[in-house]
Image (cartoon, rainbow, N blue to C red):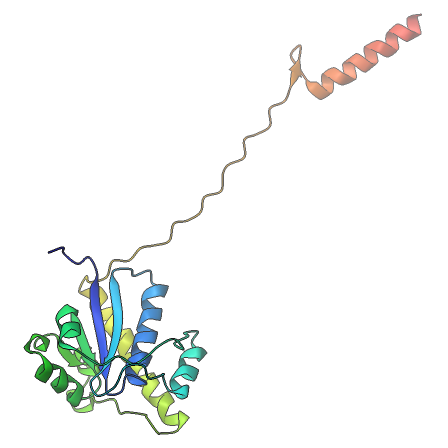
Length: 205
C-alpha cells in the first residue's frame, strides 16, 4: 500500500452549507498564502444529503476575503472519509459524537475546532447560523477565522506543514559592451583620426 505524501483535515458541520465551507475556504486561503502544499482540506456534513449549495450569506462573506466557493456542494460524512482523514474538526459536540458513533477510527483525531486550538472548553461551541441574519453569520465567520488562524500556528509549530517559498526571479546580467579598437585606439577615436588624416591629404594636394 502506497504511503500518502499529503495530510488531510476534514471540517464537519451539520448540513455542510455554512460553517464547514467557511472554515475550509478560509483555511485553504491561509495555506495558499503561506505556500503550504502538503495538506488537503475537505468538508462534510453529519446530517445532510449530497449536492446542496452553500448559503448565500456564506458565499457573500467568503467573497469579501477573495474566496469563491460557488462550486461547493454538500457531502455526507462517511466511514471511508473518516478513515482517510488525519484530523477531523467539528463545531459542536454533536458533530464530534456523530463522527465517533459512525466509526471508531474517529477516536483520537476528532475534536471541536475551538477546543483543539486551545480555547475555553466551556465556550468551544460555534453556533449554526442557518436561518439567521447576516450579522449572525458574520459573528460566526469571525469566530471561525480566528480559530483557523490559531489552527495554522498550532500545526506549523508541530512541524506538520511543508512550506515552499516561491523562487525569486533573477534578472540576467547584461554583458558590458566591448569597445572596438583600431590600432590600439577606441573605435570612435580611430574614426576621428581617419577623418583628420583624410582632410590633411586633401589640403596637401
